[in-house]
Length: 261
Image (tube, rainbow, N blue to C red):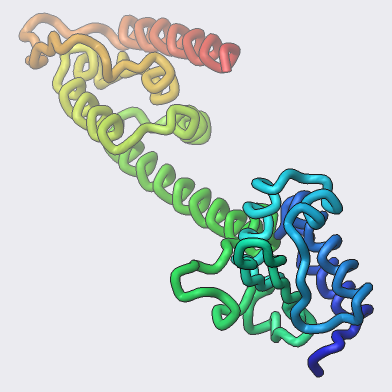
């Protein structure tokens, strides 16, 4: 190994590593330095005037200095700025001699200044994409579990146990945070004590889906404790009539809510 370096191996390794790691400007400058070094025998260090390289790479001197600094930081080249009137000395790092399986396809720390931090992986790097997908899946699973737990608490607290699947769907659509979920449970406990929810065996309690879609936890707190009157109770026919009326009303609200989703 060493110099003169292997043209084919260096070029192929560079092409593999530059994709998604270098900018277009950095690729152009590296290619120009590569061609210059190849032309003079692929030696370890070679001199090149800034104006000559800048013109060759079709960039101004300021952009040249910025770009070569980036290439050095990413581990592709090394250079020593020339003193006044002297050319800059460049060195192409032998990319194919680096164990990229250990370096995770990033420049080895030994080839960077102690004051410089390793370049980060580009946002389209496969490892970053995979990590993002895994985090999203984990977050989605955790969110689904939390929603299921919240609905189970709601269902346990709500006194009318009908149309559980529809109620679960409505609660999932609501996506309550912790504060809203607590507010909902508190409202249920208060409304359980209301006249409307206690009379006639609770037949006037809204269906859970209707209650959720109507955001009934926001109802004004005008709760009167229901005390069974001493007057003559309703006949069975009257109770059944009222139950059917309330059921028809709940069904109508549920249908309207389903149509608005």
